[in-house]
Figure 1: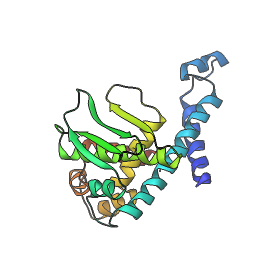
Figure 2: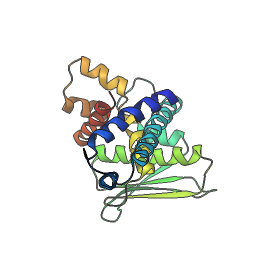
Figure 3: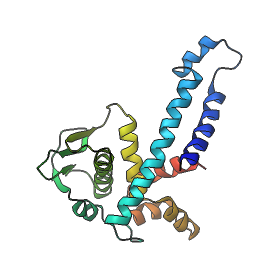
Length: 207
């Protein structure tokens, strides 16, 4: 897995180099937000997160879901993990949040006004936050996912986790070989077309 991360980082690093100003002085690197080394370090961190989110989502599916059954019963997965789901009217811009305050049962709050496909992805995303923190030995934490706020590696991990849990790459490929369209794939996985398209774009970048 470490070798896969390194290969991905090298590939992404070459893309970063290709995007740098040609023929300029070293100061021109400020256009990229830092040195080549800094950019490569950032991309390597991203590659590690991609691998970890995939591995954690696969372990979660294996332990708490029914293999080969789609759409994934994400509420059932949360329940079997000991996480309660509550649908509530959240403030504008907030799709979901998670709160873990031992000894209370961890709770994921989901915006009751959003459509089912969006709610399913929100639950999977919040489970990603839960798994990441629990695997780091943290039990007391909270996340609020609000549109327009900073998108950091924790949010990236949660999105990758959700994508892998709800739309495994192998299952996408299997259904594509059967001739499913993107709209049919979205319905098959119980996600929005936008979520599916983002997943396909991210997977395509890693080929």
